[in-house]
Amino acid sequence: MKISTGEFNQLMQTIADGWNEGNAHKAADCFSEDAIYVEPPDKQLYRSRAELYEFFGSDNGTDLPMKMTWHHLAFSEEDQIGFG
Image (cartoon, rainbow, N blue to C red; front, side):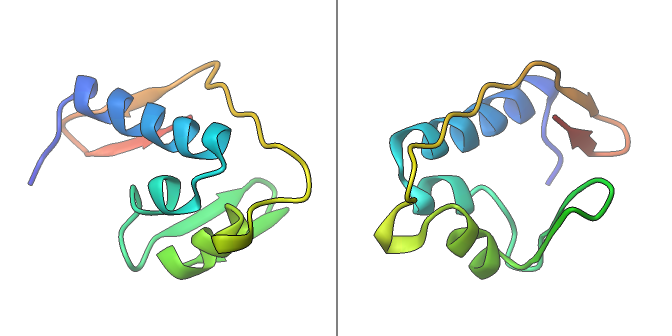
């Protein structure tokens, strides 16, 4: 299933909203079960939705409030590749 640029932007906003609300499920559920999330240069590497759920705070939340704001988003509808 292909998504549009608008749908990608909404998905990314949902991830940010999940972080900002301390809702790990909301953020992690935006990723596939086999997602790979990396912060270059391999500073943080998570393999799977389950690992991302833990990174986002799991059921316990995070020690400090998380704040995410996307400054730049890019998405290719043709290739279905995007980043923020």
